[in-house]
Image 1 (tube, rainbow, N blue to C red):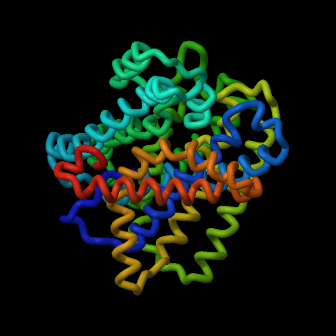
Image 2: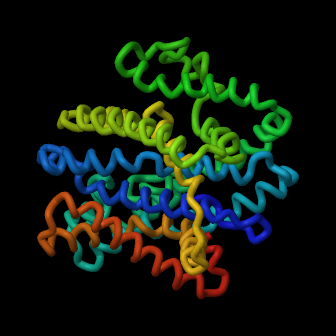
Length: 379
């Protein structure tokens, strides 16, 4: 999911571990979609519980990738044009190819005799699928501006390109800022992580934000740029002992997870909840998600891998990570259907689906890498 590894960069094995953790979290997050997408699924108490439990557990997935990006690329050492050309091109071509495939999938599945219900099983958040090629082409024409829910994972690439555009500018400050200045920025950013709940439960008009102004007091410090700086700041080193690391990170993750799980269960229990309300406690830029993300980052930072074979496997998974992200959503529906056909207990369906999807996507990307110009397909 993060930009592909550069051969010029010193190899950091614990980052390969973190990439594996993060991409598997992404896969598990989407493996929970059949349990969380529809009011009918959420009305099933067992579905509601396990969809909430697994989906909440992996909310750190996307922020972890942003933190790794900040760790590896801040401060930016290249000239702005060169940086844009290298970074954006590496994600743009795979993004366009897989976006087209996702947008044509509803039409193609029904052309081959599949039902709209089968399309919905493949793409739980997709909504009412169209069997029209014209509608698919219209969606493709919108790719420069927007994604649709059949191409659900593609939202991240718009974010990633935006971060790349911002990084050379942000980098000028990062390079000169003292640790104290960075701590001040992160402190203001942490305040913004409470705003989603303040605007939901206190007032939508907080700190000057209102119907005619979306840019409140803390707007300039909000968003994923905080995770960029957090990755840069925490990535220097973790000199804590294992005991101290566990004493700090385990409670951090537990508190973040408890808020996320309880909050999502509360919101998802309402069959009339809006899409925004459903995602409220799963918001990536929230204090609970930040706690889980920082905890995982600091914990994995202590991991050391002594086996050469394990290091090679982790490096290969890291290389394939962006490609896995691009293609994995195609496997969610079939893998989930397999667990149902095999009559697996509901608590096992999400983790088994995630394992099957991860292995299938990794195998596909590994095969694609044998092709010439594979980087244009999987990054």
